[in-house]
Amino acid sequence: MNPLDVFQQLKNDVLLTYQKQYPYFEGNWKTFSSQDIQNLIDLIAVQVKQTVSEKWIYTHLKVETNDKLPRKDMLDILSQFVGYSGWDEYVFKWKQEVVPIVAQRKRNNKVVFSVGFIGLFLMGFLIYRYLNREEVQTIPVKNAFTEEQINSEEVKAVMIENDVETPIEIVDSKIQITAKESAKIVLKSPYYKDKTVVLGKENPNEINLQPDDYAMMLKGFMKSDIKDWETRKEQLQKILADDLEVLVMLKNDLGIEYFNKQEFSEKLIVPSVALKRMKVIDIQSNDKNEIKFIRIIQE
Image (cartoon, rainbow, N blue to C red; front, side):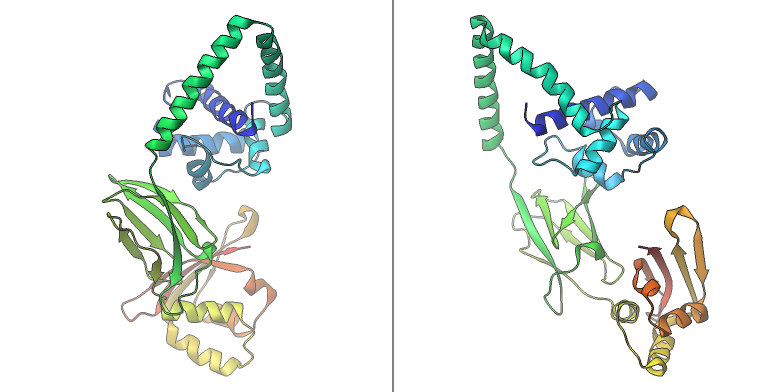
């Protein structure tokens, strides 16, 4: 049994453990709803004292097959959730169960025949899956003006199909999708304007996002080492609305810090290490295109 097979069994055990708390759930990962996902996140937080994101569950648990193993720290969390000390113990347990069975089959001709039959069946199934596979397309996400690829952490994407939203993981500034006609991809970023791409018979080779000028200026203020305070003050007056609200979500779930325009401008005027560790996750503008709302998390 290879590691991916063991991970598939771990996914099954996670479902069985979840059903102990929610016995009315009788489905599988395919029918695992958004409410079930939230329930599972809460269970893991209570029982293991660890956090698992909704996006991670969509990416690694709800998929029918996995091409590669998730990170070991996440495997440890799931293994602890189903009653083991970690992934290593879980793998050892399955090796202990599988190896004696394989040895016994080698001594039994009838069982060997059965294994051969199963192998042929699996081979046929894999050939069927290969011939009926859906084409996976990789699409880079770029700045419409500079044509440079956009930092994966600065943009989020979801696929909308039959009114169901599924998060799409962005890796190395690229998204991987299974081409499906009439589905939509919606991309959002605090520094770029939202964009919706409708998939068709000919999907785009790349997706270009148009930058939001004021948001990009704000990014420059927060990440650069500009020394000219007076120039910075004047520019901030132009891009920030008078009724600006800034919410900073503190680390370790300590709450939220609030700033108005004057307070936030004073932070931006003098570059600091703390300022550069702030990550903007949402920017909203008013009718004049001035920035009226900013949500930030501390890294």
